[in-house]
Length: 394
Figure: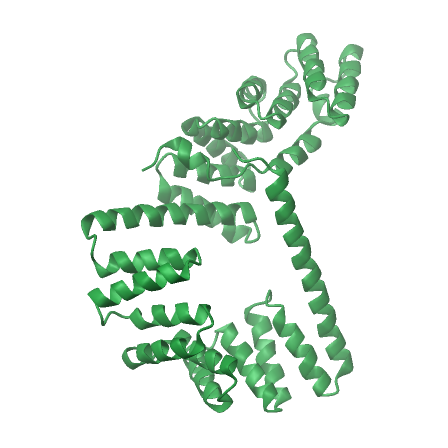
């Protein structure tokens, strides 16, 4: 188990979310909600704090909130807003103190609890972060940031299974939460690395050690080293299930179709029910452009075993379209859309098939979907680039 500081550094800070939170919470209705007749001085100071914050002068805004609290030391939302400003400056120690002061006056301020927990997390005080975030989740189970940082805090405290469980539950409810997906992936990578180290200690020359090493390297797209590990695994245990599939899959990923076909066929001799091996042989034959009929047979066999394999349906449609059987191809493509709505290429293929069938309106509708999906993908790429360059690492 690595120390807490190392664990915390695997997670980038969601700075854009933090700034949005500041904008959402610094507003007159929040600040003045607890005083029926606000003092004129408080109103004036608040207006000055707002102006300073809008101009980017956070230090001046902080001075104004401190002045407000001298006049109205029981004004809980002012502590929240002060904490948010410190938080925006990455001054987590002062942010935590401000949130704590406000929560002592009004313990129902869930946003303050969430950011208090995140502040503790950023300072590597993971036990305090867990306590604050567990309370925040109880008060507002729908708060995704509270769940995200609760999972991270638990994992950093050594409660890996509990931390991963929190993230898994969050992703089930919000499958497009990229921060949660990233964090869970990092957790699994660390768990895998820890497991591999234990295995290397217990059985350094076992085929399982080489197998897991190969899988880890494959996940990092280091295919040459992964191939070497898979070959070592086979040399130690030649007949284990999946041995030749692993080799064939690496060759397939590298576009070495002949080598892939040879290894995948060898896998089928010991495991004839491996639908992925069947499909990848068919896909490799499609890419060699040599034997479409044999490719069709392999893809059909794959779908008989695994009828929900979207990529096999895609290849099946392509093969049928090449034979001029457009109506059947469209049916196969439509199945892909049902199984994998994010697969953009199928809409391009559908548009082509519809045009061949003389169905112009349907073809244009599919072409429009392709255009929209391409734009969405471009915006996502731009967002990732923006986040990676604008968001500092902890």
